[in-house]
Amino acid sequence: MEQRGDLVAATNASTLRDPPRKVWNSLEITKLIMSSATPIAVFTMGFVLQQQAAEANRVREAHAQQEATERQHAADAQQLATRRQDEERAQLQRLADQRRDDALRAAAKDDAERLRREAIARDDALRRESYAHDLAARAQTVELARYSRIIDKRADLWQRIAPLNEQIFQELLARKMSVSPFFPHDQRLDVVPILQSSEAAFAAERPYFSKAFAIRLGSFYRDVADLNLKASIDEAQWVAFSRAHEELLQVAADELALRPGSLVPSTNALAID
Image (cartoon, rainbow, N blue to C red; front, side, top):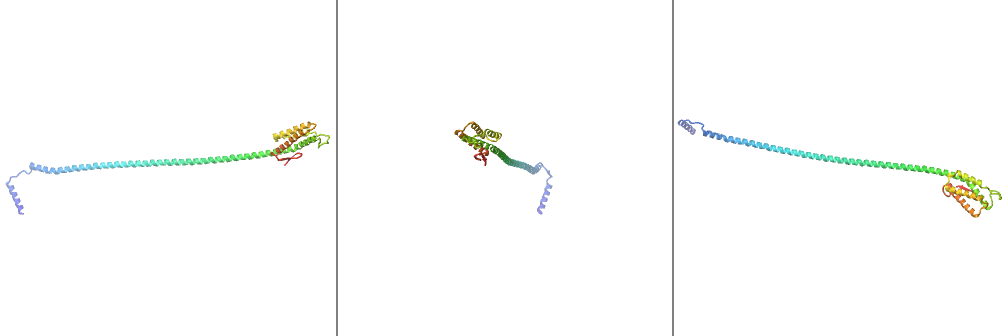
């Protein structure tokens, strides 16, 4: 306390001894300016640096945001491309599945059409076979009926002309032997009316006999006509006539049965089995 009082007293005494001076001179003002300029400069520098740093941060953030946006765009584009590829693959798969399904349906349709055509062909073949069988059966029935009618006609005719032919044969045989079984020995049987009756009966039924039988029977009639004109019959002529007569009987047997051996010749005529 004492020191402070001494300092104040000394200051007062000095003030009293020295005259008053200017409070602000140029140096002090310069000092003041310099002392004030430093913090201002520091503040200004700090502010500028802070603004630059903030601007740099904004630029970095803008760059980062742009990069992020670009990366997002790239990711979106990649995702879109991937989605498009997936859609394209799905579309291709659908097309492939559709083509496979179409091919399967077409194959199934072709198989069904083939089976239908085969069934139709089998039915047609069966119908044709059945129709042909029916035609054959009807033709056989008609043929059998025709054969039966032919046999009936032939048998009826032969029953009428066989006795006449046999009578002619026996008369000629009697002439060869100079003996007639029908009249006294001094008389001869006229075979011409008998021959004409036989020929007329056969001519009426000629369509029911074959050409071979007609030829044989016509030859028999001609031989009878030739032998009837002769006064006597020698052995050679009789052998030829007998052979022709036997052949006629055999052909007649074939004609009456439409097969050989169905008729057995008797001494006087052919009898139907």
